[in-house]
Length: 560
Image (tube, rainbow, N blue to C red; front, side):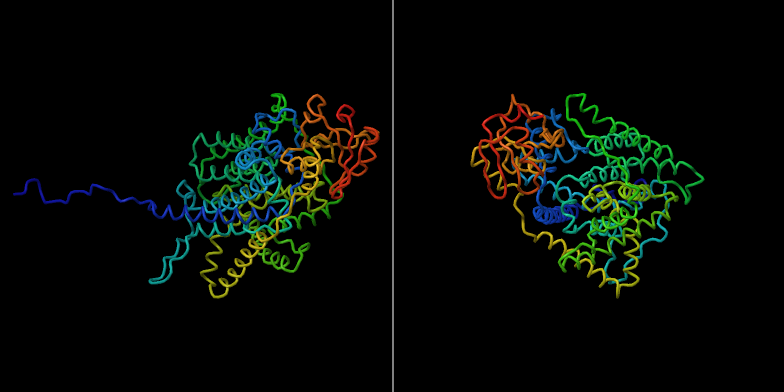
């Protein structure tokens, strides 16, 4: 007998999850870890093909001091970029695990560039219909369903990620010193991309601008280039988007108050970052050299040419200085990537006043500002200054992924017969370039012979030119402390106040009794200046192209 109506099935005790199965997530995580490991190995091998200069060696010594209790870098005089909150903590971690040596920089550079590739891919992939869920416009056309029995088309977000990551995949060998060695603004892009992941993925909440301000300040303490590549572009774009008569194209993906709050947070971070070096000095920490802002309008034509070459160099496409022939081929293949980024800039310019993706106009403004500032600066005299626009590389890769990834996928579907072979050739070229860079022979530290000789002769503290000082100290694992000097008034030697520790010149702490002259990257006129400053040496040695002058007194007492 039934009571209460028709019989019904009991509801299931378990609910079916709509998310990605755990097994699939595990496979994706395993794939990401595998790719990261392969990339790290390749970039580490390519980094070891370049000689570590004294700039990076100075950063290693700073991290070593921090690791041993000098957290504020008391007595240190750093360059115009401190890297205090970016590379230095990274160097501390590696040095704590592997000890002091040039390998710290090579491992850190490989780690940083691997993170850049992965973060750029994730950030490019983030351009999903998530923005539509927040109020933005939905895609113009829904994705085409697969043909019955045919292959399932790739997920469009992965097309964006692959394009962005692919553009960063294989650095040109001649750009190793910029992208895969000492801190040269490349590593600053890591926290910058993390900030944009936060802004792009988080829903409009009051805590996001606060966290954005903290992260921008953190990054700017290390490197003021963030002002040009992150803070100013965000403020400008959000200010323009606040004008309803300028922005068009439907509903906003985020409220106007939220974008203005992000702009205000960035402005606050810029002010805080500007005063950070003074605050660090007042707290008893490092002294930072002022940032040079010299311009060179008189050589604007030359600067424009060097900027163009530097742009190609960053994207692995500088065919003008490439040799041998195999590197010319790799550079020619990478021209497709450079052209893709240039096209992405054009697309971003066309979409500039349309509501929607905030990252596209901000990244476009950041790239233009960085390129323009580099072109009119004194750094554009030669390609060595290309490090000043290194962040154009990850920003351009993300911009290309977000603006052109879907289009490339659509072109593949429409012209599969000829476009797929072309893309296959380009992909093979990029992978071959990656392998070619990893196959380069490792080079020994530049001043390793000098460090070995000094240790063998029990000379533990002395003076040298800047490009020999810090690198020799690191090459000796700090068994020898070599401090940098330069010719001052009257051609006498004085301490060099750039990436140096003032404590090393204190005669009460150290007994320096030798001067290094000659050898690679020598300071011109060192021998004559040393005799003028300290008198005639007691002994002179010649080893491996170096001249080592030794006295029987503490030279620091006579140093200007």
